[in-house]
Image (cartoon, rainbow, N blue to C red; front, side, top):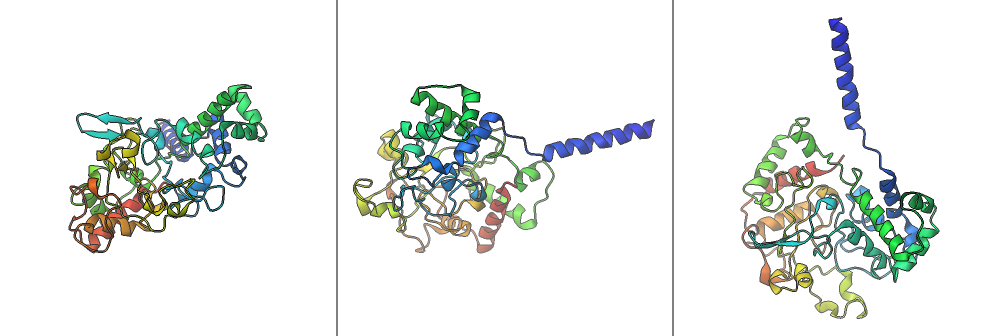
Length: 358
């Protein structure tokens, strides 16, 4: 009898482990959002989807790992690197923290919208991205999509274009909030659960990340209050002193899209909150899946993890990098002269590789 009980307990543990390893199925709304997310018929001209600039294979960043993504109209480019959408569902709305004297939250690099629905709705009608001129162009296409019956099954029929557009962005927000986009399945998560042992180099990288390199000042190691897990960001804004990217094709666009031409300077958060002291600052991104989302920085200046880690280390004590695109608000307190050896830089990169979801 006792042996039978032990056998049943063992079977229960094995079955529980199997259940834990199986990814949760998407809900009908999440599945609908996924279909919309990958639909290349929704751009004008057709051929570009949300996944073109946010592909799962690259940590939901640009399909071709370009510094700046090309829009549906060939030859047109937005002004910034395509930020990963992984874990964006946990970013709070933009607000000013009086105690910390800093802005927190908001989506995109500059915090210009406060929720995933608003974020999902912008690229469709951006002439430099998916190229549609208004919501009506999208809703007409959606009504002809093979998944339209699934949409009406969830939301019901509507003749109102704005209402239908809200349904579209709600479904996209649901997919972006799903476990498929936010799996928390990295080796670092396994390490926290006691299921992975760090190598000597990875352990050194973690210690450097938290202490000498000061990475954890902004890419914090405490669980996010909304996610309940570590996101490697405090959702604040910073000017890292990133140089102007001469390869940014936005500089050469016609005046219709870039009236400043080569003189264009990206003001980031400052342009959103109308405060010059916030110029040149961009939201601190999550470091989850960072190994997949190259190039790095709001303008895609850094091509590799090794390059951006080295920049953090020597920015202020080396002539290896050009000056900051916007010098007035550069952070000189937490990076630029860290005193890391090449071996220590390599250890930090080894630690960052642990953050890739599997």
